[in-house]
Amino acid sequence: MNDSLHASGHASGHETAPSTTHDVAIIGGGLSGGLIALALHQARPEFRIALIEGGKTLGGNHRWSWFSSDLSEAGRALLSSFRKAGWDEGYDVRFPKYQRNLKTGYRSLSSVDFHERLSRMLPEGTLYLGRRATAIDARGVDLDDGTRINARTVIDCRSFTTSEHLNGGWQVFLGRHMKLEEAHGVERPIIMDATVEQLAPHGNGGAYRFVYVLPLGAHDVFVEDTYYADDPQLDRSALSSRIDAYARSNGWKDSAILGHESGVLPVLTGGNFPAYQDEVRIEGVAIAGARGGFVHPLTSYTMPMAVENALAIAKEADLPGPQLAAMMESRARTHWRKTGFYRLLGRFLFFAAKPERRVNVFQRFYGLREGLIERFYAARSTGFDRVRVLWGDPPVSIPRAMTAMFKRGKPLKPEKTA
Image 1: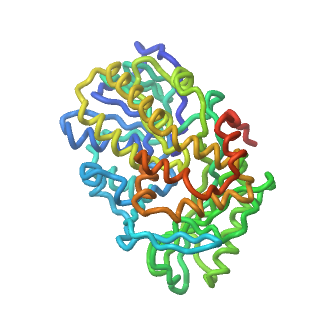
Image 2: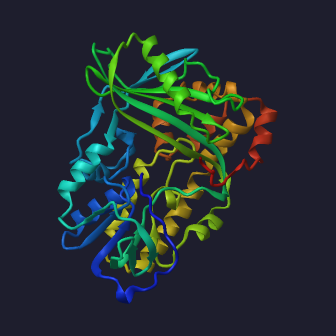
Image 3: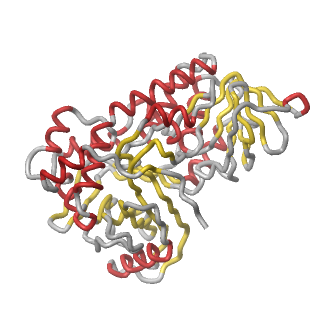
């Protein structure tokens, strides 16, 4: 999400700035902020909502994907108006030892369609695009043009911020949307093609690498090269060359490039979450989205959490801002507690498996029962699921796994960029 918003503590100079009054002000027009605005509008159409986004469009430059089983009936209803790509025949995975088709339906939503639909569904005057927040407090938001947006409730939905209080590794990716001259012949999404070379191109000693493929049309295909790496280095040239090679290996010749997507996402292996909450908290302001900790620690999936938070906030729309802030902090702590198992698996991945052999962890996992895999991605693994993931022929040595259980990992400190 291209929020490009900067928060400080309490605002000052409100008396001389022009102001507008809203029921709810949402800072950050990415997936979480946009869905909260939509859910609030549908539940309380009389509310005046301000959705503030530093970029020129909602959602930045992203593609969000999820399994059809990830969402509740109410969640599917919330997304029903968006134009989505969908595959009811399931998806494929490919590993050195096997290939498998899993029957769970798959869905994908582009930020272009996200922006277009929300722009139509939300009332005129809701969107504040290309506007940066210079100060945020429980009573409203100051924008960079001097406008003061007063609000009964303020919700912070900006991007995840790295922190010394959180530990882990990184998921690095570059995606390319291509229109081919000839039909590509891919019938279903390929969620993981791990038959590709496992040495990372940025020279950090190796990484788990896979290619993600979405057949968006007979001639349209989205190809993303992804790494689970120890360092957050995004080498666009190397990743682009890998995509070129993958396209050639599939016989996909000259094509028009319709767009790119890239990112570096944290893979959480542990940390002091209360200290992180203290770090990002603005008193009386609710926090949602990745900034609030609402992500899958291992896969970085956000759609199920974003949908459920949007529905929960809409249900409690009449709560005063500070009470909503307390509710969201409690939800975040519950989410952190419930997802401890996935952080443990992240420690196994990064600290027990040698980088070039991390593929074995996923190769074993995708050989398990389909329902277990579905629940895993939605962060709803049962007790039996957890035992089954850990039991049996382990993809890493027992001594290394035992040692990894007690490692913290590198702090996810802010990285300086050129």
